[in-house]
Length: 623
Image (cartoon, rainbow, N blue to C red; front, side, top):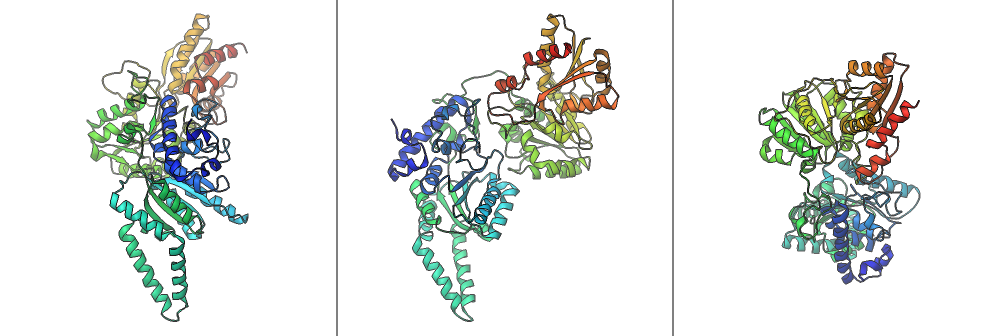
């Protein structure tokens, strides 16, 4: 029985000696590796913050004190220490605990996260509410160096410094290496500079200088300039000081004793503080240490080797996208790939190696990515912006004003469209059709399989104007792909199967399940036509209206929110053409948040698998 077994809540942790905390850290790492190897999840980021998490819970009084984990994909140790140790084996499983902080799950999860760079702004809101209520607890925001690249992070820093709010921002920097000499010196200096004696001396000196008539203020300015100069020589914190923060660091994020000493000292302060902590992604698990990007988000793997438990011969949609873009870029030097801190996740990593001068990872800055692409297009380039559907939401204004209103040729490759699964509601791409199809000049399309994906990508890139191409997470279908991509006629649907009793009009990854359902129904004597719409905008009016008239019964199928989605577009088309005597059923996702769980389970629960489609057709024909 290990020490972790005795920890149910943070108060149990506080009873341990500092020496025992190292044992707890190792046990937490072992537990995280064990569960993630079975369930999948975010590994490298969680292994890197174990000591930091322990120190926070050891020093601060959670949940009275509040901590926000930016992005939230590094909160596994936090969950293990806050009453979820016994349920941790259900991580990211249907009806299990979430892989991200979730307010409904625990009072220790004060603010739900999943998209990056929001923690400082949220912490400022919590601190302002605290002060208005006359309370005195601490508010902490733990944010990574990657998340700090987003504009909203600096907006939060700027206002926090301006208001001089009592907030502690912990910058978890896992990109820098810790030089032994600089790290030791910096740790020592910070322990001295944050201690009570130094703080009292500094404040008394400041008061004394201010009290000296005529010369006191100039002397204070000289002293402050000297302090800043020395601090600038040994620390990279001048930027944060200019924004109104007391800067502490950089310190070794794996020295729990140094972290505790620093936190104990600064928790007595009541001004904005930024603590710069250096950590190593994947700490304690060599495969993740050696290749942290590969082990950022992982599927189940074998602990001994780090290799996936299941091997597939099929490519993922992301890989097909990346390979196709390479093929097209070899023939057209105007093609440029852009992503927002997700080169591996979007399939652009190989493109980056082959065309380094034509690849841009702008960091977690989706708004900038879109407007940067607009600028490239304005000068004749053909930018392809590869961003997950859920993250493109963050750049809606730029898509409209900088791309669509100028009718610029920017291609949006929206990976992870539809049900994403284990990552939960923050990552499901369920709203892109609704927020894109009404924009002027925008073309919206979705492939039924990987072969159609390569053709649509070429079509999108060569189209004169903005295009959005949405495709799902996961493995491709396994169809034989054409040797070369070809262009498709914009707005032309594909007739897959004729029928007379009803027509299924499907889009994207719902096309093949719809076709399978129609074949099941055909064996029962039910004749169902199936149309692969291909395009959400523009719709193929001729094909849709003809089959609506022919059958009188229409079923639309999409893996997207029903409100404003593909089915709504079809309904608008039917209404505009006075097709009011039809029986129409839209299949899609209801107006609710889809929880975490496997894609297969969630599609079954949401009524979007083959059996559900067949049952819907039977019910419609019974009307």
